Every structure is written in C-alpha cells, then in structure tokens.
Image (cartoon, rainbow over all chains, first blue to last red):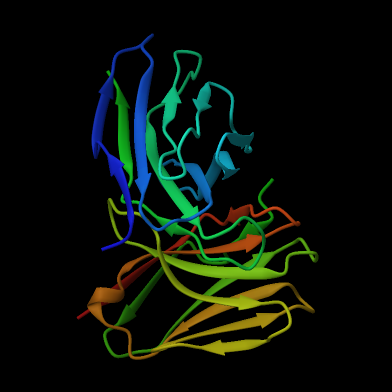
Length: 114
Length: 112
C-alpha cells in the first residue's frame, strides 16, 4: 500500500545533540513537508520541498535542517540550536506543489529531550 | 498571529446527534480549504476539502460549508459516532505555493 512512513515513532534526545527524523513516501509525490505540533496547538510548517534538491524554509525553520536528495525521502535534522525541540513532528506529501491539493500525512514522530 | 482559528476549542455531543465544528479565517485570498481529523498520537487524516468557488460540498456523513462573505468555514458531521471522537483542524491554502495554514483544532467528544 502507498503511504508515508515516519520513523522512529518515539525518539529521545539528550540536550546538545543533533537528531534526524526519517520520512519516506512511495506515493510518487513531488512535494514534501515537515510540520511541528505542540500540545493543544495547530501544525506549524518547518520546511517544505517542491522538488528534488530544492527546499524552502517554512514559518519556524530556525534550529532545523533538511535535505531532499531523493524524491522519496525528506529527512529532518533537529539541531542543538533548536531550543525547545520536544514536540510531535509530522511529515506530509502532496502529488505536486501548488494550491488545491490534498496533503497526506505520516503517523508522526514524538521527540523528547531528556 | 493565526489567520485560521476555531470558535470552539471543545465540543461534546451525544452519539447519534449531528455535530457542527466552526472555523474562521482572515485571509480573503485563500482559495482552498481542508478539514482534517486527528486521533490521539496519529497523523491528520483528510476528511473533505472545498474550493473558494463553491459554498457547499458533501461527503459521506460530512458536509463542509464555506461563507466567503464572513470568512467562515464549518464542518457538519451527521449521526455522530464514538469513532468520530478526535481533534478536527481546518486548514487554508494561501498563495501560489502550496502552504497550508492550520488552526488550533477542536476536540470533539462523542458520548455513548
């Protein structure tokens, strides 16, 4: 079945460490996105990529980095510069960039700083 | 600040009743809206969408209404079931690049 797979489901990080969250999709979608969700809050856009080897900052990109070397993969690195990284991270994809297109979401990774 | 918001953060209904979840948006240039359902610990699931050239769209047990005059969006769920209990988000698309802006969500609780 086609879909988006995020791993791991739970992740613990020590302060000062970088950590990378995986997102893979087999939907043949061009565009991929990373969102952050805090308790009781909506989703906030971290980074998005409309095509391979290209990505743009979203609304809260500071302390995060991404790469898009393959169409299927859009890993997110949470760096030590992110001061409050504990959150639920969601990856999404759309068949193409542009308006009027539904986003498909993964099941999320819950990151906790210990 | 948020341009997409919800009037009610929580909604509790009896099983079998109809539910109405509301959403206000402030960007009159937004031309595409989506409702998502998110169960605890999971990613959001698409429910229904509507374009700005429409004022109503129906799906299975769900209807979305769009009032562009007052920039208001609503999701109606008919014959609400316990499995409908979740957080519901509205989202709007702005601009030529795909960027969805999400509201804070409404927690729907269905009582048996």
